[in-house]
Image 1 (cartoon, rainbow, N blue to C red):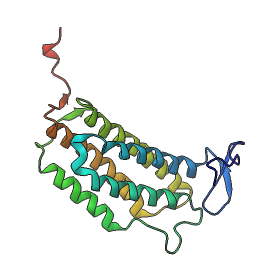
Image 2 (image 1 turned 45 degrees about the horizontal axis):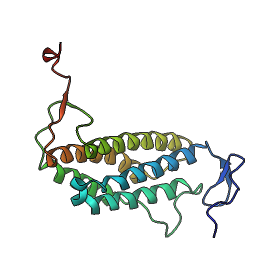
Image 3 (image 1 turned 60 degrees about the vertical axis):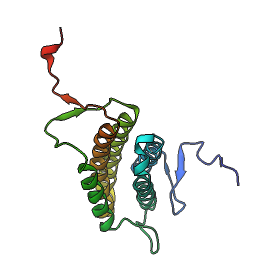
Image 4 (image 1 turned 90 degrees about the vertical axis):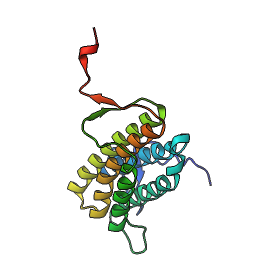
Length: 185
């Protein structure tokens, strides 16, 4: 099977059911952004400090594919299609809680950065927030799975927490905001 089909050369693509839509359709925007997020999440476990979180990150990637397949189907999730169950949201919450056990209490805003692994977590978090915005826009047009929508909302929290966890594990001091400007000329 060839990777190229030439069917999208005119600015259209196919949905799960074979129907054709423009490549800037809300559905394509939603699952395209999920695809981008999935690539960023996959890159996170390439950072040595994040290796202990590899299984959790693979689970996230699995759920992003599930959500993307639901968004790609104009008829909604079909019988037997992988879904996002409410327990997946609860699992994300447990992951966040577990990560927070190693963190100092959050009493300030945090400027993203400090190490490549930390920055990568924050980039993934911002892409996740965009994916959630695209999902909300799609949900306004066609009702989407409630658990999938909650999963995306919780995932941005998880990626933020993972960035803080990576900073602690890499012995990087978080840059607080607002910054103490008394020390700058």
